[in-house]
Image (cartoon, rainbow, N blue to C red):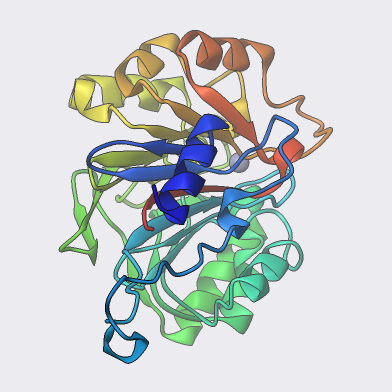
Length: 314
Ligand SMILES: [Zn+2]
């Protein structure tokens, strides 16, 4: 057993790395007391016997999909590094500057190929103001739903239009060509017809919902969709909703994540984007109980900070 295999075995033994014949996946620790992050372990090169150093082929990085659930307080922001080198930001969190800014700086993000606003609520769009002021964005995915109570939502959309960014309003059922050879990105829900409301639940149920699949491993991004949209997705997609990873809908509120929905998704890992001591008392105890009953390991940004889930890689 070489050093890399030894390290893998050690990580498997503490539950950080799950190895299968087809895919390596890795979930950062959150709710336990582990102090060593697997992501921070640098694997030293293993010399090949017999070949002089100059003749050895350079070590090639194995492609991976890195998914981050960014700790932005009471709101949503998720970042994806695709295997083809392109990148995605889904929502910007509630704060126009830190902490999303710190994350983007830390990850050397100077351009974004794809930015998604799941729905026009402040805890999802406010941080996009920073993004569109400091980062070159190629494509912006939006709903056609107007938040009639929010001048800020109009302002950010106007800013994006003025910048000349390519704006796309996907329809449910669309497949997005973000990494067409390797990654399937399917739009399960959105509001692609012009509409408007100041009702929280109506806007939440307009959320762009995406199922991202790489190497037979899927992540379901739900925005803030609630029971109504979950029921519609069960009718439309049934067991095709199955996903290894669930970005839990609406910050773990008691208006989302029904047992019937979980019974279709069957998540192994559940990520809750939620602020510490938030005024909504998210996540709801009933949602946590539903997730536990479904057998999902729960990760929370309020307790563990930014979370990482990796598919593939070395
Ligand atoms: Zn929200």
